[in-house]
Image 1 (cartoon, helix red, strand yellow):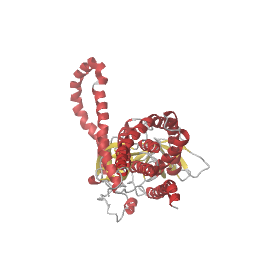
Image 2 (tube, chains in turn cyan, yellow; image 1 turned 45 degrees about the horizontal axis):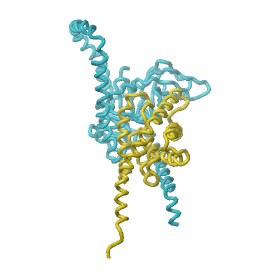
Image 3 (cartoon, chains in turn red, blue; image 1 turned 180 degrees about the vertical axis):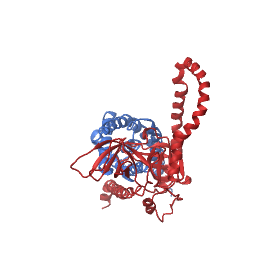
Image 4 (cartoon, rainbow over the protein chains, first blue to last red; image 1 turned 60 degrees about the vertical axis):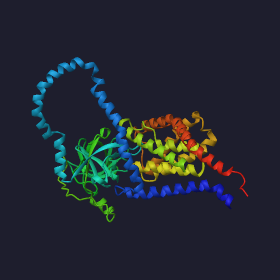
Length: 303
Length: 175
């Protein structure tokens, strides 16, 4: 009997651990349908260490890029640079006048509008790492629980929705991007109010599935969050309809959406320190209730 | 135990470095440190220790990834098992066998991810290039990773074996 056990212990352990993993996967996927998940001590430690390490590791790349931009790439344009220096003086005068207008109409204004529209406090965060697997689209942020960042909080930029915080440790947070195949957001077409679900499929585009035939969805329409899912506040910009794949036979129609956010150049984001009612219910009684701020669903930024 | 801890530490370092590099390079162009670690463990750490080490490697990736929790633990366990089986059948110690084996394993993992977690989508024309590049990069790096793991695990194992050797060869007890 003992010999048999000795011979079978490797396959037995293999089967046991594989089964255990499958059970965890199945239970975790159930949680993910709610939008987010809380991670325990060990995952927290790993994420906690990952954020500062990855921040340090990205420094040489940042320095190399800025070094290239400032010195190497400019070596051949020294004479042109001297001519341009003369123009700089003249343009500085104009620049002073334009700066005020830029604040009014540019990126800062969009951020200000976004903050006013949603009245939720926002925490700026930097993207310090990315999923190593090409099949999952998530990023690591340098803000965590000590900054008020919790699982289930929406992450945005001044141009639109980025995703959802799915795990956090004291000084780091992981965000599932809209592009991830597990991501689904209840959405509206801003012009016609046609309602549907925006899904990620792991590519750089999103899929908008709308249910009622005859709904008015056209190329160029802006898609915003509907607020019905209880995960994102209403009115956040998701993207723009690229192509409507209409099939007269089917009840479920589909359109391709170009995300409002350029996920390839994601550096700074804002975490909305607010959690929707659905996710709040999910974490009720777990002592993980964020400080709630009133969110006024007034409309899309820039709408 | 020290060999398992060493393997986990090496994998964690790999995951941190690759995670930091990933935003700067095209999708799929970075190697998968956990898969490579599981393959290396399959070659250099057989038995119960290898299973536990590979499972832990998968969990490390799970904690840092957006995947459903436990998915990579399962995948790396399967990768370790496949490598153990392949090591006997295909003589994976040779790079000429290890390289295509790792490329095939990368493709198999992508198919399993599609089956279990719903992605990647193979009807999307952009998936195939990402998969090909990812498999190529993994295959390119695996001999190096295998050597690193082999050296690290061997170095940690050596003192442990010599100590136990001393214990067993101490001679007959004194009367």
